[in-house]
Amino acid sequence: MAQLSITFLGTGGSWPSVERNVSATAIKRNHEILLFDCGEGTQRQIQRSNISYMRISKIFISHYHGDHFLGLAGLIQTMQLNDRKAPLYVYGPKGLNELVGRFLSLGYFKPAYEIIVTEVAGGDELHFDGYRILASHVLHNVPSLAYALVENERPGRFNKQRALELGVPEGPLFRKLQEGKTVTLKDGRSVEPSEVLGPARKGRKVTVSGDTVPCREIVELARESTVFVCDATFTDDLKERANEYGHCTAGQAAEIAKEAACERLFMIHISPRYKGNEAHEKEAREIFPKSDAPQDLEEFEVSYGE
Image 1 (cartoon, rainbow, N blue to C red):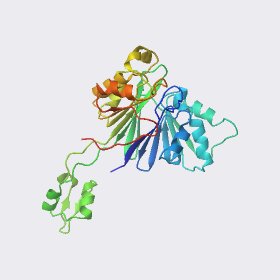
Image 2: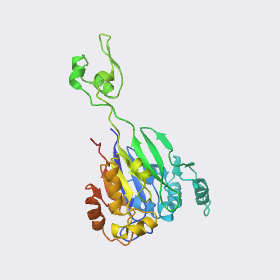
Image 3: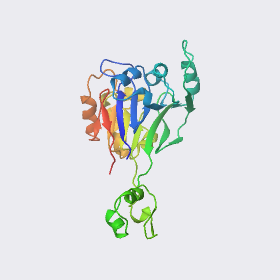
Image 4: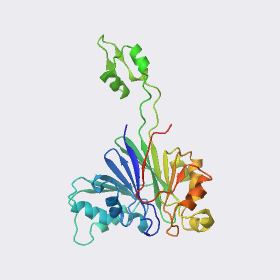
């Protein structure tokens, strides 16, 4: 089973504050790290965390407001200064090629490692080893994407008793069957995985909203997420202002999580006006009990849902 965890590198919005840095969420899957947004100061946050920026293989930018991408230039250069050799893949909405090209021409800098830029649009699916990334347009005041990491299905539960009845000895052949491989017994009989495995089980799903107002697109993308990371810039007393600027409130984030049948909600992009997380959590938990507003550098291990 793959290890999957989230590190909240920046949980604030608009500009860095003493309490929170701006948007950046790292998802670690086994030895690979995927970074969703890269606001100003993200490389500093990474250095304070338990993850390594040299393990970041892919960066997904939601949109081109500064608090979501201004840290990209510094992070790219820092990787160079630490002798990065592996390619870096950067994904984002239309305009990413031009933006990264400008970053790579700032000052006397030329990367010695390959940077591969891919512009994506809502409805795109990107397939990787063991998972895929779904992109969806959401409603902000500039073109903006949300992303979902969806793991491949897992084999069904292994029926040990049935395997023994079929003559499969305990040991390496059990593991092969659990991996979905056909095994051959000493008497020449073959045992298929379908004979000893239950129905395939869903992998985990982590959805990151970027900046958005409540909309059908984010509900559908977040549908049945194990973890939903959502913009919750203000509390409901400032709902009109939040929506005017293209953001959700804590209550609205909770409503989305509830409608989408998510298992867990984490609220980020918190306005600098809030010094703690109590107001957001109180408001959201009245609608969706499993709601949290994490602090910077908090980590969360994503377990398999039921």
